[in-house]
Length: 347
Ligand SMILES: *[C@@H]1O[C@H](CO)[C@@H](O)[C@H](O)[C@H]1NC(C)=O
Ligand SMILES: *[C@@H]1O[C@H](CO)[C@@H](O)[C@H](O)[C@H]1NC(C)=O
Image (tube, rainbow, N blue to C red; front, side, top):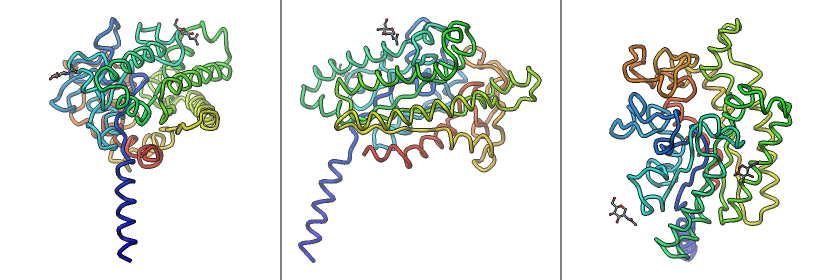
């Protein structure tokens, strides 16, 4: 009995030591950007009030929400800092980035032509920044420690909405080249080479993020209202999101069998997000159809400014912060759900 307890304790100790994630490393768009766009020439920014009014210190960081975004909550759930700093933010350096760093850029997508629309950071350049980060990390910590961080870190990726809403359905170019099914397949091939490239430079634990029910974003409801459809969700966009999620999920399965030693998971926000949008009151929300900021119908970025008299006083009663982005409360519910159901398996 005594021996058993000693063994059990020893085992638990080893398990506890092994079960740590040293860093959270983030790629993607505004769903996860922590402020990289502040440092580049683009109109797509949010480093001013009322953005960030519920963040630590009420600080507008460039996150597209009233507070934290999912990687912040996920980092905290892994026992790390309660936020993940942006790589281009001059307030942080490699000693901060050793436990988490965000390369995401609002407005970007898998497709190079998506990041061109608002002159934001293309995915390939996020990866270039990541490689530069690896070099800095090795200089700072030495090869061995840096390599451990690189292989044990959790990589969070979240993008794709802009490829459809900002690019494919807004501009004529991709629509003339691909039907919607072909365009999804094109994006999946990019996602595949992206993950393989991360794997090739040492990443092992990757979460590929899926799309939300993007037809239910307040902006899409407003468009539906203008088109005489009564402000309901755009069911076509939701179908596209679900189809694309199905393909990403298939990709994850394939990659796990192709890449030895990898642990790749599909983090699908769609089902929980759909529940929130369909029954906001059961999550404590009063409104899911209009956003908190300004009229809540179409504003985001510079149009969501602190002088707008319509902005709501308590963002916690709204599912959406601006016409395109969830409130901190929604981000927390989704992050906690994904952590419990999927991401904790990366421990
Ligand atoms: C990072 O910044 C902190 C202060 O903000 C400073 O003390 C530290 O020396 C810097 N580290 C490196 C590696 O530059
Ligand atoms: C995107 O652009 C980069 C840089 O020009 C290029 O290396 C990459 O092949 C392009 N990706 C695709 C899928 O065309």
